[in-house]
Length: 204
Image (cartoon, rainbow, N blue to C red; front, side, top):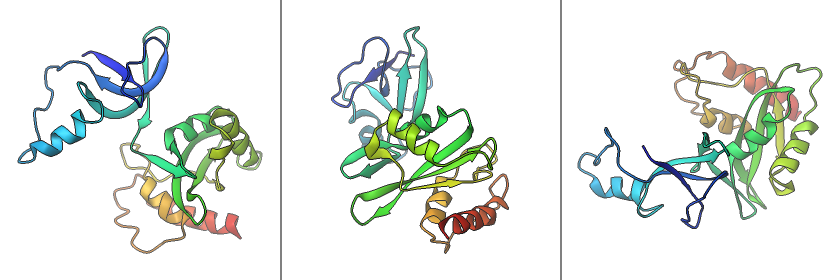
């Protein structure tokens, strides 16, 4: 497989850098189409970066040639005209060694279009202060990306495979508790009512 990075203008990124993760050539096992919808297949994988197979992921390549996938590029929040990848926010928050993990989501905002909300799982809840997240995001991404809200929580809702269910976090942050869906697929369904209570308490 010949992986490569392209910038948002479709230019190849040489050496160490960040960009859109693409494949420069076909490989054994590559899908050839989508059943009864070849146009959708073409639009999804071959129009974003013409001449390349677009994986849908952003990535960082280090000087030694190793790639680090930074997250889905379609998972973005539009804050006052700035398109911010949630992975960028989470990477910045992760620089604080008091943070175990975090998840950023976008919610509607009257002035900005969307506002950022970050859920943070700290090593020690009583010691950690949310202002550390604002500082980390301002330094790592920019002041325009500072979250509207930061919730310090015990854990995040995840599937059994360990994927964070951002849909639930978004609804909880918006206090939209109708239609949360089937929670039985979560690794720990009891985390949802706990999160709802923690968010309500921190908003009080």
